[in-house]
Length: 380
Image 1 (spheres, rainbow, N blue to C red):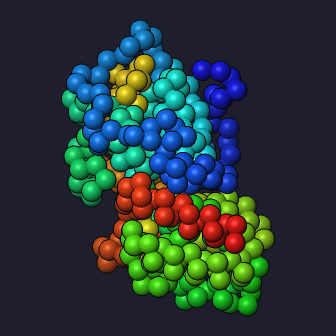
Image 2: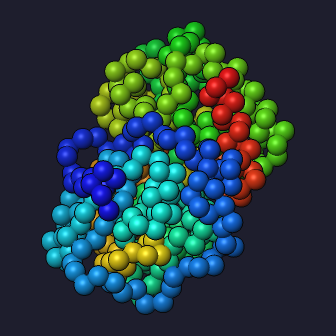
């Protein structure tokens, strides 16, 4: 693995944003061309080619290569694992699912743990990129909340263990737009004109149009997706940016309204008390980022040891307290900051969660529709 494609980075004191750089648009081109760019256009059926059985280290050394989203870890997550196990962690970062997928699909990345989002898991499985987890090596798996042990994206946690989860909603300036905003119609407010943002992500961005029009954000219907694109093209006239970097624009006051991931919104709120976050009345999305072991992981056993470590109550709580996202670890709640734990925007009640579905993997054909629609929005 060359230095040009692999930069080891440990904690550097910067903010914990999950996705605080512009998301790559490579995924959309890949989806539209049947993943040909990754060499997996004829991907095997889900589950074929997966590695399983007892996890062992192919390389006899106390090492672990971890590939995670930028600034999405607690200050002591790695150091506590290294102290407990003697395993040295090389920690690298990516800024989009497609960037990470292309690296893993190349077969030469050498990573032992990666953190795809839930809607990408089935893409990875169709391509045979992951190994089945060895549950005997993860005794703390029982600490997970039932919602994440029985999730549709991976029932029984056969291939993944959740890292952190959150919602997609609206972050806004209270001084500019008031204490409460009405939902997506807030984009029409005079103070928001030219000073609002939509996430640079096809499924997230188009969900605004789908939800505003009363459609399922997981629809595969071509007309509904096209209608959502038209809605976004009209909305685009009122926006200041289409970007996934929302923290700085919100905290500086440059932007007063942004579609945002909840953890990013809470980071902005921590830096500037004028920032608020809400789940729109029209609804939003839930997402979870997942720890997975690539099929060719050189230190698969050590990867399982890290997964078990992060599922410890104290370690899971420290992660949640730092990144300000929800923890999937039920046993960690005793140690999570009460302010965070009692915030209904971080841990929404059941009736609100019902309006926040996970993004579903819709298959190549439907994802290509979203890719084409988003391209129209971005270029139109």
